[in-house]
Image 1: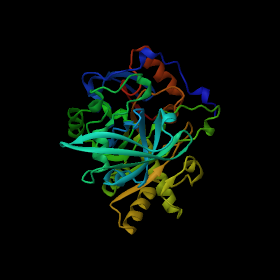
Image 2: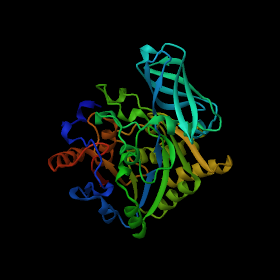
Image 3: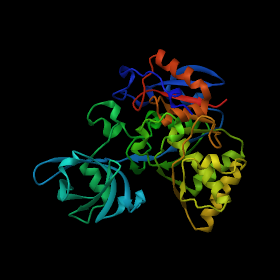
Length: 399
């Protein structure tokens, strides 16, 4: 699969560097029944299929960029990517003594060994955060964090010590506005280093109107990693290595999606991360039926597992697995790569922003709408839509 087929010319001036004053005032491109129309995002509910279920990713962006200092005065930036010890995100944030994370280290040549520190104040108490480099491989390092006051969790430490990691293509430093606007209004579970940006357009007003119009809203969690910004640099898409991300789903939400399918209602995913979560859950259910481990869904598992399993059978298997193991929520990791030709098993439509050229997200869009992605992006470029994380939105329906 030629990666050069999934690119387009994106002028820098079309990239939205800041959010609009009102979240739901962004433009909305609607693609359905093969045609394109234009509206404002606050009207998105009027374009949804009758009785459709919306599925959101309620992850919360963490302040993952830490400015640390050596005793010599050298400044070192540590960007937390994902936890290593404990490896579960929720557990890693709950610890009160020590945790190890996979990190990107800035100015790393000046930090060969020893501790670097950051002094912070929480509720009037001074706390010293210390970091030690344990190992380095593939441009990342495993960093061990400790802090001087065990009354505070790592979640509290990073909230006070860190900076919100806005996307690199904004070409600016984080500002105060990003602390609230680079976060969805329904964010709940800390763990992402990038926002699920389709959700940035929603306001409480829009959510209330959607509920009032008979749509069911469901939350799942996928903690977005920095790999979402990694462009495809291989000539063949199949040679690109997809990043893995942690997913969580509660038993009631899995049951709700199963009931929606049995009722024959449409399901609209809010964001590509919700698509990845939903489709991953389906294939993990297939793995359950095959008697395979459900701890991890590899990049190409979806293309090699049995292809004829129904959604009710798959999600039913997940619920049976949870019952047998006395689980209230399901936790796994996914590396799924959704490319053109992939058959969506759960999702009928997608609310999403406009994505970077040469990105895995653009491949996913092509999987949803086929070659029509060219027409959709040409329309957006010629009608003054704003692109990428703080840009405008689209509702893309299959068929």
